[in-house]
Image (cartoon, rainbow, N blue to C red; front, side, top):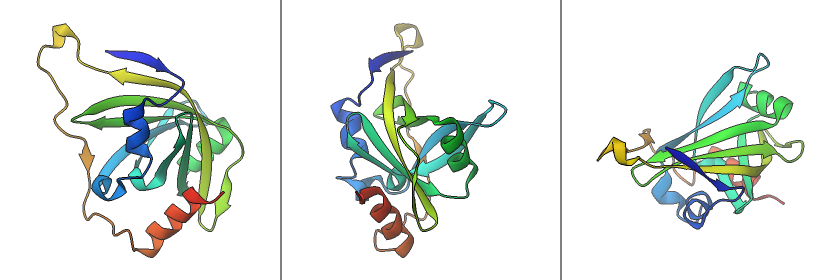
Length: 157
């Protein structure tokens, strides 16, 4: 069952999304859900490469400018980041704070954290636990030009 932690990332999530230990997070996928024009949910898979926590209340997301998720986020300005792994299950509800900035083929969104939901098993669920998150291969190299472009977009002021 999930419970609200309020409109700021707790220290553990802030650390996960700060990219201070990005190398160890490569190969892990993060679902992000936006709303389509007909109000249906539109999921996408991204990674820790595309996310940067600027502080506990501000996230940056760099994604392909032509993607449906980018269009949805620009038009409706809301999305939910889903973090699911053996040590964390949380949902971060966000709102675009301003129009995105373009960096080549990427759009960078600045997102205000509106609510963080922490999801933990209830007593009735017994020993049920998430065993692992979503992973992908091959893991990208931090030296790859496309990775450097994403990181530059996230870190630009």
